[in-house]
Image 1 (cartoon, protein in one colour):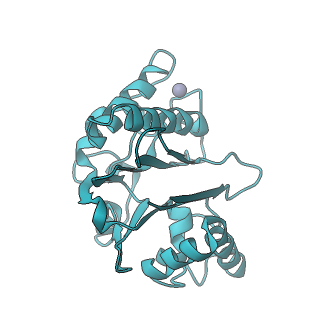
Image 2 (cartoon, protein in one colour; image 1 turned 90 degrees about the vertical axis):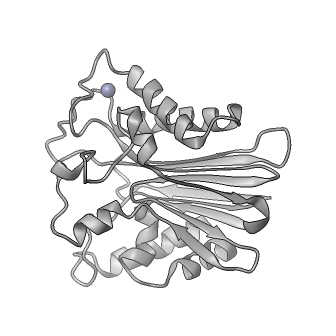
Length: 257
Ligand SMILES: [Zn+2]
């Protein structure tokens, strides 16, 4: 087993809102990975929460990892629902969790053992799965892309019926995640990327997901993030490659099972 992860804030003076972690329990050949991308608050900073996004992603990510490895019989959707509830409980008394911009995150979760690989993807972070023959499949929750094809995506679409969904304060969102289970024999390696790292493919079009996976396997996650930073520097105003943020927090996990 070989596992590497890297993360870097888009702005060195602003806390990183991405979160990445892995756990390799002492027993068996299993493991789990968690990757979150905290949603940046609006410029007004109004979220109804006194804690902030890094506080939220650390708690949600920590709870997810603990539940995924300690409750192996618990489906990943239940792990997510439980972790969302637990995190909401940590600030319900002090913060307005009904605020549309309450701290929230995209999520990728994967767990493997000797027999199978389970995964969950919510919102626009990506999971890449490499088969033993080298084929790379991207598992994506494409709700935002589908909405964007119809018109501007606004805050009104956020965690609303017919819109897109993030892990915020409502555990019911877990049922809306993209999930699946694969036989372990069909998976050689996995990678998870926040959209700040995945923009190498989706924004800068430097290559497809298979090419992105090849960089992760050969050079590691930091090299992918370095390449994204190079691309961002070469188009600082977003003229050639339109994007919401000139530089974004980036995180990537690569796991050879
Ligand atoms: Zn709070």
